[in-house]
Length: 266
Image (cartoon, rainbow, N blue to C red; front, side):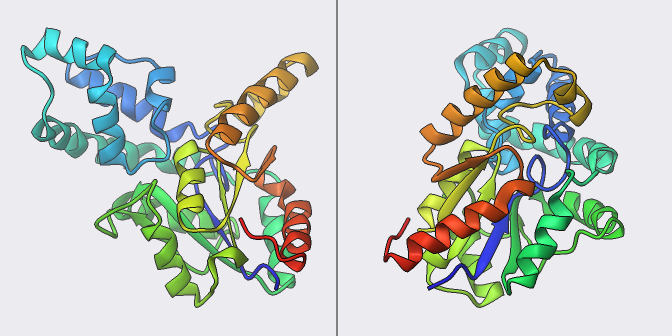
């Protein structure tokens, strides 16, 4: 048995080194509702569909307290709806500014296609946001075999249904022949829930949260510490393998195929 498909996340995994596009939008949208949050706070629920992400923010005790102090009541799902309605156009407006492909990803994908693998994707972005992003990605050579967005299905991450839709779109099975690559704990959980191998991305993604230039400016000791912290975070979420970026995936596919050949499963 061999690997048949790889399902990638988008921001922080294939594009947008450090997964920075959503962060400013989360901070800005809540500032418009007179509720200040930090980028660190905004990152905590990353990987969730954006409505769920906003709900997770508003129900965090600290942020809920700020909301209550400003608005005089606990945040409700209707409040989440209101914030979400403002957030989506904000995020869509900036997403193409953070659409650069992470170095080495295109070359890695070409090598996977040469091995006969299908390449799919899931994302916490809505379809409206991805409609802006897809042409920019395609102009750089990034085209995948499918896309499942937050909101396409009734339930999203960390459940398995978006992955199951990928299985259907790509005509691949069993789940153990599919690899999920993601930079968030929620995305790792998505792959595990589907019964697939989950590979965490440390330095290029949300777990580190730095642009390529910011990462390059770190000292070797700082880089090692950031990698170690991100590795712990993703391994706690259940990642079977952890790599610096998706560009390093080739050796992991070899290792997974070796384990499959021995009859191992995720």
